[in-house]
Image 1 (cartoon, rainbow, N blue to C red):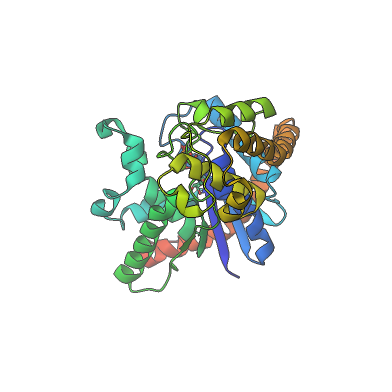
Image 2: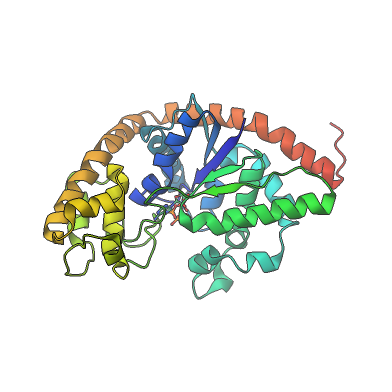
Length: 334
Ligand code: ATP
Ligand code: MG
């Protein structure tokens, strides 16, 4: 049975970008008759500083967001990464397969480390090898992600191929990034050239899944745009990243194509379009945040779900990491 693996960092509150680029699609994958494994990647989150109490809360809140978005812990394996030790173990082995030159090309490290890369953690640099371990540990071949993670999934393919080649085995299958839909790269509401991110210092740059209706409406009203009306054809959005972003968000929320959205709103100004988008966003997100609130009232229940998921994940991952040790020549005698 083909396997899907994907993850989200509990590095803050989840955003509309995480919902449209990841969560919504994670839930849809469950209906395709494939095995779905979803992970709150807390080991990735600590590649940048996380306050311990906040990390715990964010992990539970992210789990609630998965469930509220339709990821069903009965049909999917849902767990947090650090509870399955094999992730860290395989990551080490793959650190020894990946090449420095490959890691040096990773744009996420450059973006996150900023100008003073000397001050970044070693973990932030090794992040893509841990991500390769996450995927390869389950022999997953399908990885639904946003556009920003394409490079890391491609690196995972390179690491898998080098491992297989170096040890003369056909052990790790090459995973495919699944980047589908109209919201594969939701942009910041303040800057149409920057990705919307949960770790952006500006709260106004993003819509959080837990924002109330007034906050959502206000953030969309204040979103940076040009003064022109919306065009009636997609081509007209080419040099208008902010306008294109809002149209894409509308399309993804409404399950329409951007062309259909422009069919409805072409020729209209943002004075008309923004309130319509705000209303749609509230309509789609309010049930999720209500359900998250309900789930968060019982953190013990969330922890139980993650523990059961971790047991199921471990049952798949343990034999694969053990086999990896064997292939590499390590004595296994207990
Ligand atoms: P951080 O700023 O901490 O990196 P993030 O918002 O980028 O947070 P991640 O946990 O790194 O979230 O990514 C989780 C998933 O969400 C990945 O599949 C990623 O591609 C997707 N994703 C993140 N941001 C966006 C976005 N703006 N548009 C579409 N998908 C996104
Ligand atoms: Mg990210």
